[in-house]
Length: 90
Image 1 (spheres, rainbow, N blue to C red):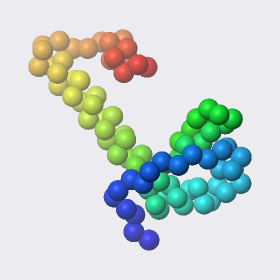
Image 2 (cartoon, rainbow, N blue to C red):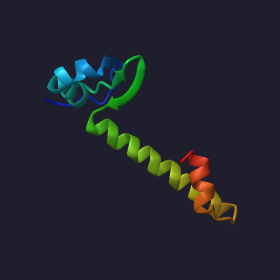
Image 3 (cartoon, one colour):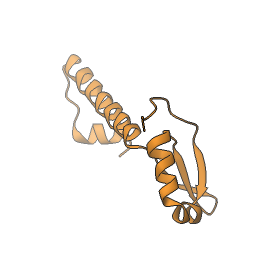
C-alpha cells in the first residue's frame, strides 16, 4: 500500500482504546498518515505518528539547528551548549 504524502487530521483516543486496538492505531498512523494523540484521563500524554512523519520532524529539527549554527558563524559568534539548550527549551 502506497503511503500518502499529505498528513491527515489528528485524532484523539484514550490510552485504553489505543491499547485495545493498537494494530489499528499503528495502521492509521503508518499507512494513512494520521497523527493520533493519546490521552490519559483528560490530558494529552503522547502522540503516535507514522515513520515518514517522524523523519520529516527529525529533518526539520536538523535544519533548525543548522540554521542556528549558520547564524552564529555569520555573526562570528559561536553559541555555547548552554545557549543552544536554553534557546531550544531543553
